[in-house]
Image (cartoon, rainbow, N blue to C red):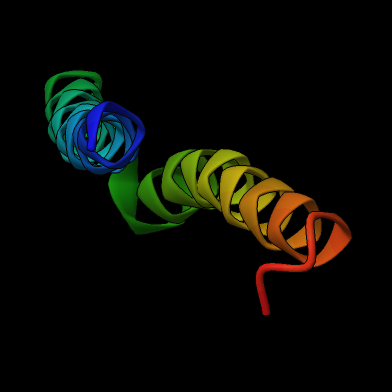
Length: 67
């Protein structure tokens, strides 16, 4: 029970953090007048971090036999 709650909270709170970081990046791009290309580069960098988190979760689940 406790382990399941921790898993749900970790993914829920990490998802909230990712959304908050997306807002911060959008606000940074807007305030710095980065333009369309600069905004895409900023979001690409954030997307790589999110992608890394997702790949890590999938690899760990695969190694633990969670598929």
